[in-house]
Image (cartoon, rainbow, N blue to C red; front, side, top):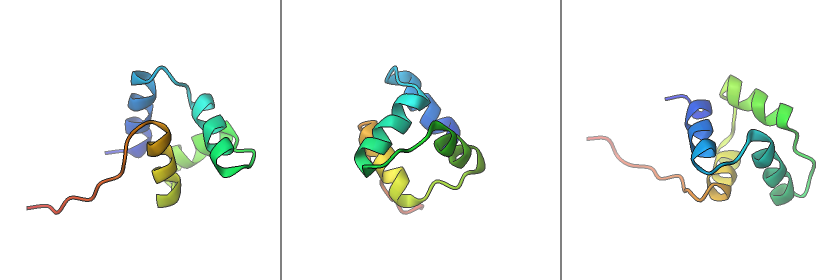
Length: 69
């Protein structure tokens, strides 16, 4: 599973763009968070855990760990 694909699916379901998400991340962090930065991290798969938690919170989701059987 690629994080980029999953986040893009969720964005589509919520009628949001990557630009909208980058803007909301910037607001949460209190900094200027560019769409280029977000897009690059998603493409490379280098989104860190804190960023993932912030993204999922903005989108109305949460990160959950489940033990594999």
